[in-house]
Length: 398
Image 1: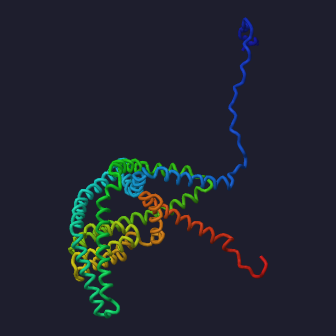
Image 2: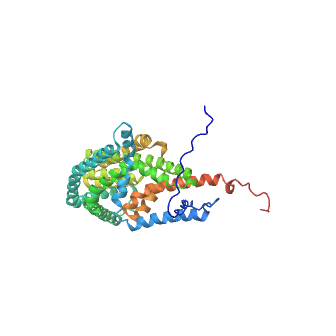
């Protein structure tokens, strides 16, 4: 190694001309203002709830004329979501599973309409033609019953004037029932928009069913974080009650409609198919369907047969149906999972029908289930609060 210092790099000549101005430092965007400790007030929470409910009711009122196929499509999507989810877990794409299930349900509905509607129309003709004979037959049956009562209790209890009055009123009742049933069945298609029910409902139902899980997840992500757990639990309880009642009740209605229609037709009732289907479908309203079908079938049997043996067969059909419903169908399909009282369901259906017509009937049971779950939740809160747990007063002081 030599003792010479290392060579220095050559000097860089200074730039010619004036120096460029210094570059200003980059300006960073300011973070959004943070309000430490800011919480929503009780008034804001109540305003959110009240505003949401008011908006929902206003939309239902404003669009009630066109909401029926959409609400019906939502009911179909809710009903078919469990089997669609099972098919998706087995490897079938959810869109394909939704399409197949909606297509199968639509085909089943069209097949039922094509098979049943001509029979119902034919029975309307039978009803119109046979109404005078029904009036005569019901008059004879009532006359026989009143004569038997007169022989048993004496003319002081049942006189001729009362007998003629009852017979005349019975004939008018049969005429009114026949006209009402004919108008109901004949105008049934006119009550609904065929295009909306047969075209719009399946299409909307398919899209809702395909995206049902994603829509539920999106709605869940919008829940306020403070109450998300409670709202999630309330929604789960509502779904449990609603699914148990709705799916079980629909299956009950289908089974009872088939049983009553077959049983009444088997005993020879001319309008047995119509009355049986009506009784089964109206069983959606607890006790109303069975009672309405029973009274109608007995009156028509008295008008058609004129003897009490055939009327007894009609009564036997409904007795067997009630036994099967109470001890076989209801325990197996619904069981103890249902937490909707029959009186509450009847009130909700009638209130929804009065408020919004057929749309209100569709929305009645879901709203009744949600209100029932909320009522039980607030009742539990009340029973755990000082309002209930405070000890009773022991003296005159507070």
